[in-house]
Length: 368
Image 1: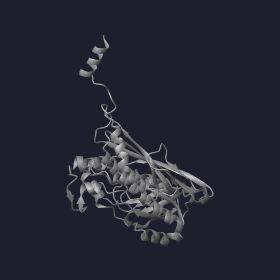
Image 2 (image 1 turned 45 degrees about the horizontal axis):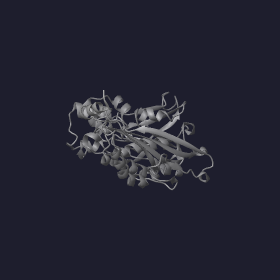
Image 3 (image 1 turned 90 degrees about the vertical axis):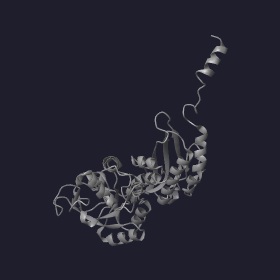
């Protein structure tokens, strides 16, 4: 077959292949970078070197500030809360959730979040949507006091729909070796302080969506009297970021450890920082969860134990502190506008707690 015939066949029946024809737009990616640039530049620290657009983010660790620095890292995502953002076409809040899930894991050991890098996978790059996502990530980094050191936006046509995306991030923090917090610091007689969540945060959305959207068929744009706003606005309430407040608390009071209440609920996450031989006994009567938890429980007939295993139930972060520092700890958190209260206490297992479990919850289930 002649070259002319081959050429004619390609042009009329099989057009020349290109990256754009396959669904990837380099131009849209470049435009997205330009639109996200001001948001990334907003979330910075003095240690950041260079600017957005390099092959690697550069962060100069000032070793004269720490004697024995220990680096901490954490990676996480937002989960199916993203489905709500996509359904409402609101994309500037889930970035805050992303930062919260990462930095508040770092601060549990006393680490100061230094920087974060994000990864955004999309079916199609829409620059304005990417900019909104990064705007939220930038705001989260500002709240946490860390830098947004760059990241990656990957276009996945054929694997994800044009309006679909997912986000994840890795954060790095630092803590002085002799200031690290953890289970080894916890002692009998310590007091457990609860810090209020802003709502569902970023866990349990598969169950929440199943109950409220699929089962009860509630519209996301419908006003809910118990919330004082629409269901969608309630579900997209950003996760509270505790990093700065936890660091301030650790600097001013005798904090033994923190526990970030995420997937698994209050008991399972607190168990991770209570050592063998001790039991933290918590009093459910000391707080009232937000209305959204009760609505999920009632509309879905979700058992109380299942609610507590799935959701934070109104407690987003826990601090274990020395008994003599409780008043000071509560004062620090109150001054920083974080709802906080005495949640329970730590004792030797099998003594006053009457149990061998590391965490015991007493009283009526808060959403029952």
